[in-house]
Image 1 (cartoon, protein in one colour):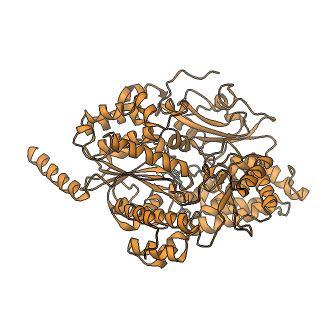
Image 2: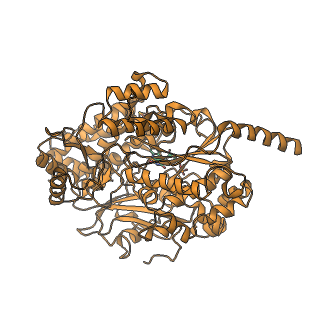
Image 3: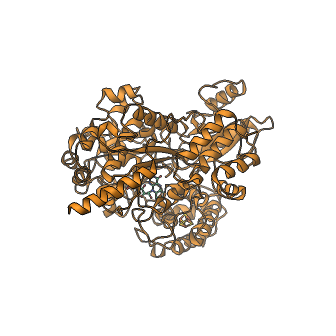
Length: 433
Length: 201
Ligand SMILES: Cc1cc2nc3c(=O)[nH]c(=O)nc-3n(C[C@H](O)[C@H](O)[C@H](O)COP(=O)(O)O)c2cc1C
Ligand code: SF4
Ligand code: FES
């Protein structure tokens, strides 16, 4: 197994210690992609992104070009960047906002030009104190350089970008909750339809919401062409992607890899990537954020591609991969993930609000050796109430998909490790404690 | 007399000005209040309400949704220990327990001297350096009990002041310029543009 020679599209600059400075940005091709874009028509820029087949990097993997083409024509429309990054074990946008905020600002400006939008907002989770500073500095630099503001590089196109801080709420990553937060309200996801903010978004106006990583790809795509991007990867998964690897591996971290050309095994075990599992073997993998159903050792050879992972009944989601080795208690893992959902449920929908807390309490008593035999099926029954049929993708009973994501880890843990749940009950304690 | 200090008043007015609707500045303004008062004080909420053109109850009702907005006083240092999945696998719960012992408080509480508030957090997006600890929303990367105690000792003596400023998360975020594009101009420009393209086709 080897790592392919694909170019580093979005992390090339981050290898420099001063990657966050304007000097480094300009010395390494900064704003070249933007200048090229401004010399083209907006439609041609969008066509280039269509050719690239750039899939959204926020979790759902919706093609960026297609999303843009859905923007309802109106006098005023907005572009909003999602930098909430609160899906557990996801930490790739963290790198992009702290280490290369200029690239993000350039990407946002390219997208705004393609969409002919004159005001953009970059929403960053409030815990990114340094990230907020870095992105604001990059914006300040861009205004000074004529790369932002009125009449950008004398193109006639004008844009303002405003950084907006969150205040600690995972649910604000859901795009309609994010828009509510941006309007100064509680982060309650909006009732669908409309399914896309492209019709009715911020302040009721048409709005495109894209992830930080999605935007960061645009300078390279403009400079090298959509076809060069599409030549990397395979099938629908083109270009490279940031994989955030954590848990029981020697070298956790963010790795930019060509899509599809590597497997979970490559990422986890390659000496130049994860470096292997220090204690024992892989027991389970969370392949795309804690909303995703788990994988097991027999799926280690699945390629890291959107459709490839979906075919195996899970999702690549936010590109975050957690490795759990054979010393891991599956009840404890499922409990902690469920506790997260219970804390972060916004409370609008009964199955999500009540179900998450109930599930957490049952898992907690199981983990502490106070469970009852019927608890295991009780858990599955409760899960079935939130996402009937426990299918993947889940059936939706709630306003947003946070609710139906809750069963993923519990269902994964029980269907594979039921004996471990039972051992907690018969032994009256956690076998791993 | 205005509630905010002079420089914060200027920042507050700028925050209001960069949004198409004033209420959008609610959360940034709450961060500004926390920077000034150490928490989201009653007076601060009244001021935010005034600036956003809504009622103080609406400010409180919104703020209460968000973990980072504290309507009760908190310590000078907000210490967050992540126990979510990647950190759990690296001993996050054990580190939190250790922190509780070291500081002599349970998670959620504040030390009597008002220096530290300990929080059990969800994922802080720094999962490769686990368990993740933040102080005042700055990554401090103390993953062992020893390193944690060393940090606490330093903070007690007033150390690391430049690295860990106060916990208003925007304390060092400064926008240099006002908006360059007047929204009314944009709307007008668009209408003209559309009329022109319609005529051409
Ligand atoms: C509960 C929930 C949390 C989400 N969190 C994030 C997030 O932190 N960052 C993000 O970019 N997208 C997140 N998303 C996905 C967004 O709703 C949206 O699809 C995405 O920002 C679109 O950008 P993209 O098309 O560039 O991927 C979340 C979705 C849900 C349902
Ligand atoms: S599913 Fe959960 S998080 Fe989503 S809107 Fe309903 S209660 Fe809120
Ligand atoms: S799980 Fe702890 S920082 Fe991500």
